[in-house]
Length: 474
Image (cartoon, rainbow, N blue to C red; front, side, top):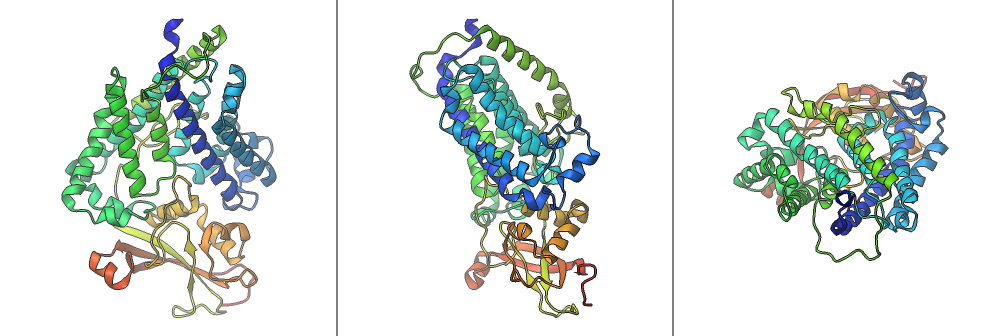
């Protein structure tokens, strides 16, 4: 079938696949370096406890059959190795079916991780990586030109990501309709970046332009993805520029970069013929691709109904394989930033004016004088959940108490998630407490005078002084 492939988009496929492999590498690296303290055998939300109560059908995963920290580490590092191999072009060194299996492997491994990751893996970009990764299996390699239907499904996914996010904003917080949300967003977003302070201090008319441009990019431009070239390329390029603006303004894990990956699949790069001749797509490949496309179109019904509903929900998976999902972000924007500050003391009797020492996290605001750093696309899962915990203790109900217990033990894996512990390894604190603070960005004048980018004031006690059961002390 001549219409089945698009030979002139071989470079679009190549760029898209390489970029996706890089995102896979970051995702697996994040999993490998953080899992022990989060979902390991002694983690805050252990996988064995989860799989004991959740059946395979609801959460398909390799770890439903067996779990050990060694097995999880092996899967995560294997995912890293496969991602590197894909970056190096190993899929094109294999026959078509072999390349497809190579792309299927990281998808299956990451699905196994996400489906047992619980709260720590409840972010929309996890499902987005799985949905994109599944489509990449059917893009083919150098043996065949990219299938038109898969390129269309990538654009369809990009449309749902952007249009769904635009709709949730217009239906959610009134500040999006008034174009005032960005007066607050750069200050109250989950994890500010090194330039977020400067974005916040832009003149308010610029914030209005930012919000209006966001609406155009998310509610109008997505429809242009399905128009002829070069309009579709221009639409994708505009989306890429918008995503890079978001990359500069904050730390949103790999959400922005995955959206760029999807947009790259719609860009028509000026390129000649492919470096190696391609043959006609085998019949079995055509049958498989068309069958998968039909399945994904059928599975799109519920996400589309959700997207068009007045009760639209963000970041919902409608099947346990995360094949077709709903997306969205910042349907509401906080006006005030709160942060939970955790402190420990070696005093036997904890007093309010005692020697309390603050734990420093890697990404979330703590010391007002410490400037935020760029971490994205690397995802600091604990730091992100601490932002949610500050919004409401309900978000921290399942894991915060265990975090405190691990800090009281000076647990090595937990401390690795932090930037700095104020206590030496051999002398853990006797008590831990947590306080809720309000944070705001300093003004230009305050920044010059104090060198601090934040000003904070205590709101209330979040957790009273707590010690390990059986430990001597007050």
